Image 1 (cartoon, rainbow, N blue to C red):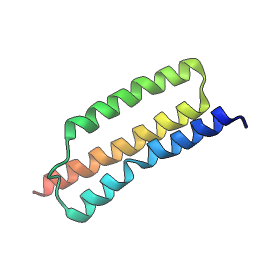
Image 2 (image 1 turned 90 degrees about the horizontal axis):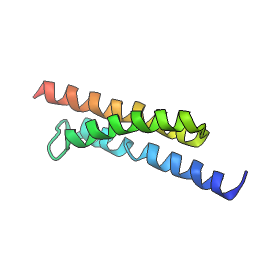
Image 3 (image 1 turned 180 degrees about the horizontal axis):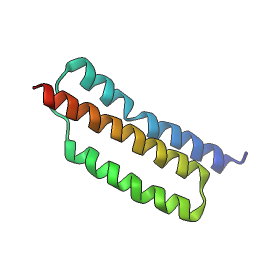
Image 4 (image 1 turned 180 degrees about the vertical axis):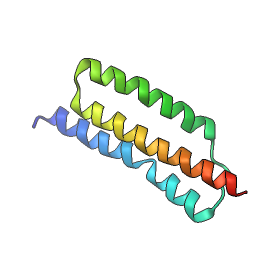
Length: 87
């Protein structure tokens, strides 16, 4: 594997796991205070567009990154929605 591919996979992992702390914080605190819902909606939509692009150019690291990001941002949005409904 070449260095550019290694860097691509490292970035994929890092960009993907960056959503996990928000999920954990929201679940633990039971509040969405300070969370920008608009940010996550825009990220969700941007990742869908970017996934389409990655599929069009055939970049496996980007395809994985955007697919995982869609799943995790979707999870964040679900947690935010469920938390907001409880309050």
